[in-house]
Image (cartoon, rainbow, N blue to C red):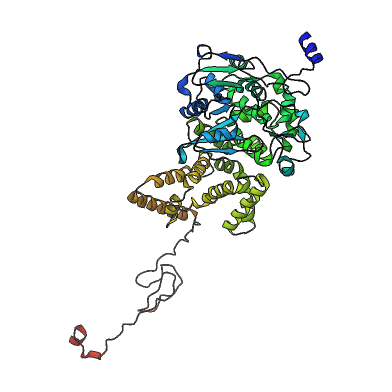
Length: 526
């Protein structure tokens, strides 16, 4: 209490509050014997980036979530590097490096090519700036582009930071990061961890704590609200919990997310669902009282997370991430929105619309209502549409349809979608098994499978036909042409034959051969 009173008199403040110079924390250098990081878990490409920067005379460290995961004995998915070199200086040291971003200018250093490439994100130490003294614009990123063009530090009317490209020392850079466990720096060459805000202690206590005043930090960047949920979900399996002071303003601060650009919100939503902890994220949102109100499409995911099909899709996504397999946002969103597509399609079919145009119209409606105009919608929408359009085609296993289906680029995604539908009983399990065999079979096996499909179709057709009941036949007539004994019916004339129904049979006349009796054979002999 006395310290806080003295700080107030001297004009000091804690990080994240306005007024005075904040306390940036005391630098602690923790050796390998204490932190216990296994250097074998560190990506060699990140080590090379650090080494190149240090060889050029700059400071450089692995930073952020990678250090947190290394402390916990996990293998990080991504590695970021922080340095005191400017983005232009970093770019000049690497052959394949690109400066990106406006709000935060960073450098992507690319290693490798094609699918095997790796991106190491390099950021420059940023100065801690008092946002109360920052330049203020009345609009947002889009409406105030010209005004923001020449500004290095700017906020909007709500206090959200729109530009933060003022470089500074490492201690100030640590203070402007979000959580203490994400504000540590690791030197892979000396194996020393630099800690300013007791991050190692919080990691041992399994606590997620915001640096500075949480409400102020959420106002500076509302996306930190989503990051808090994501980290809590990811680390909940290890026993981590949000500090009470950090969690308290979350619900009240949700309204700040309305000012964040839709494209950024869309990307953050995908991170929540594709980091391998989608199920845990849904549970964390409900636990924190944030099941709705963050983002409309995320509300739909949470609402449908307990349905069999969406639950299976979320579980499958978590499994694939855990196995190191790639996941596509188009697949997961196609699963989440399939209920809307199917309902719209059925409604149109009930109005006697043609099936294929009806399906396309239903898909268009879902895109407009659920996804809207976000960055990258074109590619995303094309992939989702292809998955949905494939579904009725899986029912057709005749002619050239199976061969053309298997040859499609998105066949595997469409098949996996149909397999999930089979798992929840929406389509027959035998259909999914047939396509699984067909997709991996040789030519002879495919021919046999096509024959099997034809026989199954014939059996279904026969089963669908109405049953015709036969009327019992009447008693057969006496071969001698006599009426049954006791009958009043008169006997037919001699030589006249009757059909079973009692009508006289028509006698066929034998055609004579041309030439009368001059021909040979039996007739001539007679």
